[in-house]
Length: 140
Image 1 (spheres, rainbow, N blue to C red):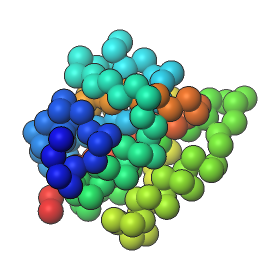
Image 2 (spheres, one colour; image 1 turned 90 degrees about the horizontal axis):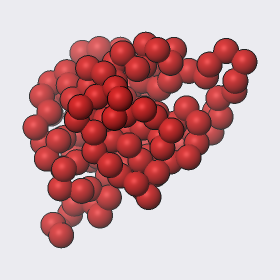
Image 3 (tube, one colour; image 1 turned 90 degrees about the vertical axis):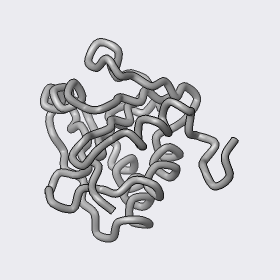
Image 4 (cartoon, rainbow, N blue to C red; image 1 turned 135 degrees about the horizontal axis):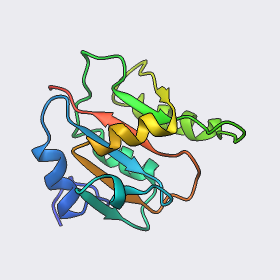
């Protein structure tokens, strides 16, 4: 155990965010997400929810300030609904580190395409639909 590092970090997750460069993306995915069939760099965080991982990652992780879509979530599929409380909870956490941040929503298959090219996909134990979020790493 390291001092000052959240208990939600596995060694693999800590190494992944350390290795990421400017513009690399990490996906924090719910338990339903097909991480293993989309990306070869999958980190398991079973039993951990995405809100806790966001709270652990963001103090160490600069977001890319040069793009508008530095934080991305999946939109609900037509005919399904999105729980707005998920987004509100994420923004409450994000706002502690990045004021006035916005979340961009993209459709399911566009989200999958970005996840395919992400540096890593972290599959969590979150059981909320459409809780998936992508963070784009920045500088400083």
